[in-house]
Image (cartoon, rainbow, N blue to C red):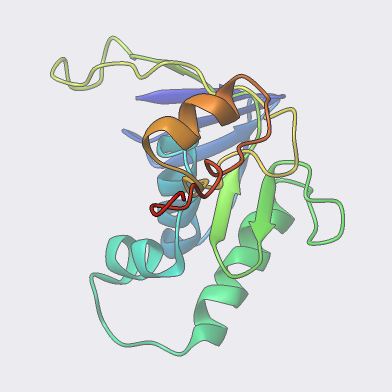
Length: 159
């Protein structure tokens, strides 16, 4: 499977990252980390997801993940300040926000199916699950933009 974004090509079958048809050297774990982020660009990826996918659930210090993430950003010409392609969501995880397009290579495994393309989110909160704040009739009222007020208290003993 090949993923195309900006002027990069990530070929998972050959395990190569290319920029303008020149191979960008990356370590195996750095490649696996980038491939996982690009494959799951439609959602926020937690640190636990990355540790399970890249390190097969082994216990490693958090600094190992930080070091590899910095290497991924360096290979892409990105940084923690710019966050042009990989966004860090504090307390949530990471998200690949580049405009990635998947294409199936003819020489690759024919069982692979191309995923829909991922687009850059328009808001800084994109990809963060939102909590439902109301249920039932309150939710219906909130959808219409009205302020919900509880029904007035009616005294049960009216004399």
